[in-house]
Image (tube, rainbow, N blue to C red; front, side, top):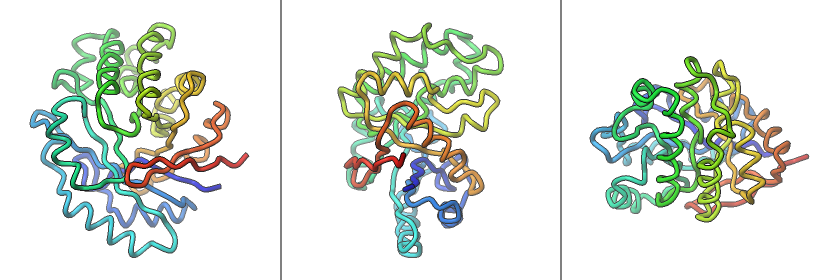
Length: 264
Protein backbone atom coordinates (compact mmCIF):
# COMPACT_ATOMS: atom_id res chain seq x y z
CA UNK A 1 0.00 0.00 0.00
CA UNK A 2 1.29 3.45 -0.99
CA UNK A 3 0.72 5.35 2.27
CA UNK A 4 0.49 9.14 2.20
CA UNK A 5 0.08 11.57 5.11
CA UNK A 6 -0.91 15.02 3.89
CA UNK A 7 -1.19 17.12 7.06
CA UNK A 8 1.81 17.98 9.23
CA UNK A 9 2.89 20.87 11.44
CA UNK A 10 6.43 21.57 12.62
CA UNK A 11 8.20 24.41 14.38
CA UNK A 12 7.31 26.55 11.38
CA UNK A 13 3.79 26.63 12.85
CA UNK A 14 2.97 28.64 15.95
CA UNK A 15 1.61 25.60 17.80
CA UNK A 16 4.29 22.99 17.15
CA UNK A 17 7.88 22.34 18.16
CA UNK A 18 8.38 19.33 15.90
CA UNK A 19 11.54 19.25 13.79
CA UNK A 20 10.96 18.59 10.10
CA UNK A 21 13.76 16.05 9.85
CA UNK A 22 12.28 14.08 12.77
CA UNK A 23 8.90 14.03 11.05
CA UNK A 24 10.51 12.57 7.93
CA UNK A 25 12.35 9.90 9.90
CA UNK A 26 9.16 8.88 11.71
CA UNK A 27 7.28 8.72 8.39
CA UNK A 28 9.92 6.42 6.94
CA UNK A 29 9.82 4.26 10.08
CA UNK A 30 6.05 3.87 9.58
CA UNK A 31 6.49 2.90 5.91
CA UNK A 32 4.83 6.09 4.67
CA UNK A 33 5.87 6.88 1.12
CA UNK A 34 4.73 10.49 0.73
CA UNK A 35 4.11 13.38 3.13
CA UNK A 36 3.09 17.00 2.83
CA UNK A 37 3.98 19.71 5.33
CA UNK A 38 1.05 22.07 5.90
CA UNK A 39 2.09 24.81 8.30
CA UNK A 40 -0.48 27.26 9.67
CA UNK A 41 -0.50 30.64 7.96
CA UNK A 42 -2.67 33.74 8.03
CA UNK A 43 -2.35 37.25 6.62
CA UNK A 44 -4.83 38.54 9.21
CA UNK A 45 -3.01 40.45 12.01
CA UNK A 46 -5.81 39.47 14.41
CA UNK A 47 -5.28 35.73 13.90
CA UNK A 48 -2.88 33.80 16.19
CA UNK A 49 -1.17 32.30 13.13
CA UNK A 50 -0.17 35.74 11.83
CA UNK A 51 3.50 36.61 11.51
CA UNK A 52 4.98 33.22 12.40
CA UNK A 53 5.92 31.83 9.00
CA UNK A 54 9.31 32.49 7.46
CA UNK A 55 8.80 31.04 3.99
CA UNK A 56 12.45 31.29 3.01
CA UNK A 57 13.49 29.12 5.96
CA UNK A 58 10.50 26.81 5.54
CA UNK A 59 11.27 26.03 1.91
CA UNK A 60 14.97 25.65 2.67
CA UNK A 61 14.19 23.07 5.37
CA UNK A 62 11.93 21.21 2.94
CA UNK A 63 14.58 21.20 0.23
CA UNK A 64 17.20 19.97 2.72
CA UNK A 65 14.89 17.11 3.75
CA UNK A 66 14.12 16.29 0.11
CA UNK A 67 17.82 15.94 -0.57
CA UNK A 68 18.49 13.90 2.55
CA UNK A 69 15.55 11.49 2.23
CA UNK A 70 15.07 11.41 -1.54
CA UNK A 71 15.60 7.65 -1.76
CA UNK A 72 12.97 6.88 0.87
CA UNK A 73 10.29 9.57 0.96
CA UNK A 74 8.46 11.96 -1.35
CA UNK A 75 8.08 15.32 0.38
CA UNK A 76 5.62 18.04 -0.65
CA UNK A 77 5.51 21.70 0.38
CA UNK A 78 2.06 22.79 1.50
CA UNK A 79 0.29 25.27 3.73
CA UNK A 80 -2.85 25.43 5.87
CA UNK A 81 -4.55 28.77 5.41
CA UNK A 82 -6.77 30.19 8.12
CA UNK A 83 -9.93 31.79 6.71
CA UNK A 84 -8.53 32.04 3.16
CA UNK A 85 -11.80 33.56 1.88
CA UNK A 86 -10.86 36.74 3.74
CA UNK A 87 -8.09 39.09 2.59
CA UNK A 88 -7.77 37.05 -0.59
CA UNK A 89 -5.59 39.59 -2.42
CA UNK A 90 -3.03 39.48 0.39
CA UNK A 91 -2.99 35.69 0.37
CA UNK A 92 -2.53 35.61 -3.39
CA UNK A 93 0.28 38.17 -3.33
CA UNK A 94 2.18 36.19 -0.68
CA UNK A 95 1.62 32.68 -1.96
CA UNK A 96 1.69 32.95 -5.74
CA UNK A 97 5.49 33.33 -6.01
CA UNK A 98 6.08 30.30 -3.75
CA UNK A 99 4.73 27.68 -6.18
CA UNK A 100 3.52 25.42 -3.37
CA UNK A 101 2.32 21.87 -3.95
CA UNK A 102 -0.81 21.88 -1.83
CA UNK A 103 -3.14 24.28 0.00
CA UNK A 104 -5.49 23.33 2.82
CA UNK A 105 -8.23 25.76 3.83
CA UNK A 106 -9.58 25.85 7.37
CA UNK A 107 -11.81 27.81 9.72
CA UNK A 108 -10.27 28.49 13.11
CA UNK A 109 -11.87 31.88 13.71
CA UNK A 110 -15.25 33.47 13.03
CA UNK A 111 -15.40 37.27 13.00
CA UNK A 112 -11.87 37.25 14.42
CA UNK A 113 -12.96 35.15 17.39
CA UNK A 114 -11.42 31.77 18.12
CA UNK A 115 -13.85 28.87 17.88
CA UNK A 116 -13.77 28.36 21.65
CA UNK A 117 -15.01 31.93 22.16
CA UNK A 118 -17.67 31.52 19.47
CA UNK A 119 -18.85 28.41 21.30
CA UNK A 120 -18.90 30.23 24.64
CA UNK A 121 -21.04 33.02 23.21
CA UNK A 122 -23.38 31.07 20.94
CA UNK A 123 -23.52 27.64 22.60
CA UNK A 124 -24.92 24.87 20.38
CA UNK A 125 -25.68 27.35 17.59
CA UNK A 126 -21.89 27.61 17.14
CA UNK A 127 -22.04 24.49 14.99
CA UNK A 128 -24.34 26.21 12.49
CA UNK A 129 -22.25 29.40 12.51
CA UNK A 130 -19.16 27.33 11.84
CA UNK A 131 -20.69 25.52 8.86
CA UNK A 132 -22.00 28.80 7.45
CA UNK A 133 -18.49 30.28 7.61
CA UNK A 134 -17.11 27.14 5.99
CA UNK A 135 -19.55 27.59 3.11
CA UNK A 136 -18.30 31.15 2.62
CA UNK A 137 -14.76 29.80 2.48
CA UNK A 138 -15.38 27.02 -0.01
CA UNK A 139 -17.38 29.35 -2.26
CA UNK A 140 -14.47 31.64 -3.12
CA UNK A 141 -11.15 30.60 -1.55
CA UNK A 142 -8.24 29.40 -3.67
CA UNK A 143 -7.64 26.07 -1.92
CA UNK A 144 -7.21 22.41 -2.84
CA UNK A 145 -8.78 20.62 0.14
CA UNK A 146 -10.97 21.53 3.13
CA UNK A 147 -9.11 20.74 6.34
CA UNK A 148 -10.90 18.92 9.22
CA UNK A 149 -14.32 19.86 7.88
CA UNK A 150 -16.24 19.57 11.17
CA UNK A 151 -13.53 20.96 13.46
CA UNK A 152 -16.05 22.67 15.74
CA UNK A 153 -16.84 19.33 17.39
CA UNK A 154 -13.34 19.30 18.88
CA UNK A 155 -14.39 22.23 21.08
CA UNK A 156 -18.12 21.56 21.42
CA UNK A 157 -18.13 17.82 22.09
CA UNK A 158 -17.37 17.91 25.80
CA UNK A 159 -20.29 20.19 26.64
CA UNK A 160 -22.79 19.52 23.85
CA UNK A 161 -21.75 16.22 22.33
CA UNK A 162 -21.38 15.52 18.65
CA UNK A 163 -23.70 17.32 16.25
CA UNK A 164 -26.42 15.42 14.43
CA UNK A 165 -25.92 15.42 10.69
CA UNK A 166 -29.63 15.85 9.96
CA UNK A 167 -29.71 19.07 12.02
CA UNK A 168 -27.15 20.69 9.71
CA UNK A 169 -27.55 18.58 6.59
CA UNK A 170 -28.75 21.41 4.34
CA UNK A 171 -25.68 23.61 4.89
CA UNK A 172 -23.31 20.62 4.84
CA UNK A 173 -24.75 19.47 1.50
CA UNK A 174 -24.26 23.01 0.16
CA UNK A 175 -20.63 22.96 1.36
CA UNK A 176 -19.91 19.63 -0.30
CA UNK A 177 -21.71 20.51 -3.54
CA UNK A 178 -19.80 23.78 -3.79
CA UNK A 179 -16.52 21.97 -3.12
CA UNK A 180 -17.27 19.45 -5.86
CA UNK A 181 -18.31 22.23 -8.25
CA UNK A 182 -15.01 24.06 -7.62
CA UNK A 183 -12.86 20.90 -7.72
CA UNK A 184 -11.99 21.16 -4.03
CA UNK A 185 -11.47 17.99 -2.02
CA UNK A 186 -11.87 17.00 1.61
CA UNK A 187 -9.52 15.19 3.94
CA UNK A 188 -9.91 12.38 6.41
CA UNK A 189 -8.15 13.99 9.36
CA UNK A 190 -7.21 11.21 11.77
CA UNK A 191 -6.51 13.44 14.78
CA UNK A 192 -10.11 13.06 15.95
CA UNK A 193 -9.55 9.35 16.45
CA UNK A 194 -7.25 10.26 19.33
CA UNK A 195 -9.81 12.59 20.97
CA UNK A 196 -12.60 11.48 23.27
CA UNK A 197 -15.21 11.58 20.48
CA UNK A 198 -13.14 8.94 18.64
CA UNK A 199 -14.19 9.84 15.10
CA UNK A 200 -12.24 11.34 12.22
CA UNK A 201 -12.73 14.91 11.11
CA UNK A 202 -15.10 14.99 9.34
CA UNK A 203 -17.30 12.21 10.64
CA UNK A 204 -17.67 9.18 8.40
CA UNK A 205 -21.25 10.18 7.51
CA UNK A 206 -19.92 13.34 5.86
CA UNK A 207 -17.22 11.39 4.03
CA UNK A 208 -19.91 9.07 2.67
CA UNK A 209 -22.14 12.02 1.77
CA UNK A 210 -19.31 13.68 -0.15
CA UNK A 211 -18.83 10.47 -2.13
CA UNK A 212 -22.57 10.04 -2.74
CA UNK A 213 -22.76 13.60 -4.08
CA UNK A 214 -20.01 12.82 -6.60
CA UNK A 215 -16.92 13.93 -4.69
CA UNK A 216 -13.66 12.18 -5.56
CA UNK A 217 -10.74 14.28 -4.31
CA UNK A 218 -9.74 12.85 -0.93
CA UNK A 219 -6.55 13.20 1.09
CA UNK A 220 -5.65 11.65 4.43
CA UNK A 221 -3.67 13.44 7.12
CA UNK A 222 -2.67 12.85 10.71
CA UNK A 223 -2.51 16.60 11.51
CA UNK A 224 0.63 15.81 13.45
CA UNK A 225 2.13 18.49 15.68
CA UNK A 226 4.72 16.09 17.12
CA UNK A 227 6.92 13.57 15.37
CA UNK A 228 5.40 10.78 17.47
CA UNK A 229 1.94 11.39 15.99
CA UNK A 230 3.06 11.18 12.36
CA UNK A 231 0.92 8.60 10.58
CA UNK A 232 -1.37 8.08 13.57
CA UNK A 233 -4.39 5.95 12.57
CA UNK A 234 -3.40 6.28 8.91
CA UNK A 235 -4.21 2.70 7.97
CA UNK A 236 -7.57 2.98 9.74
CA UNK A 237 -8.38 6.01 7.62
CA UNK A 238 -7.46 4.12 4.45
CA UNK A 239 -9.94 1.43 5.43
CA UNK A 240 -12.57 4.10 6.08
CA UNK A 241 -11.99 5.51 2.61
CA UNK A 242 -12.57 2.09 1.09
CA UNK A 243 -15.72 1.56 3.16
CA UNK A 244 -17.08 4.88 1.89
CA UNK A 245 -16.58 3.75 -1.70
CA UNK A 246 -13.40 5.60 -2.65
CA UNK A 247 -11.04 3.94 -5.09
CA UNK A 248 -8.33 6.60 -4.94
CA UNK A 249 -6.48 8.87 -2.54
CA UNK A 250 -4.98 12.00 -4.08
CA UNK A 251 -1.48 13.40 -4.05
CA UNK A 252 -0.56 16.91 -5.14
CA UNK A 253 2.40 18.41 -6.94
CA UNK A 254 2.41 22.11 -7.88
CA UNK A 255 -1.29 22.00 -7.00
CA UNK A 256 -2.07 19.37 -9.61
CA UNK A 257 -4.07 16.48 -8.15
CA UNK A 258 -3.06 12.91 -9.03
CA UNK A 259 -5.17 9.88 -8.04
CA UNK A 260 -3.33 7.04 -6.31
CA UNK A 261 -5.26 3.77 -6.39
CA UNK A 262 -6.28 2.27 -3.07
CA UNK A 263 -5.24 -1.36 -2.73
CA UNK A 264 -8.20 -3.61 -1.96
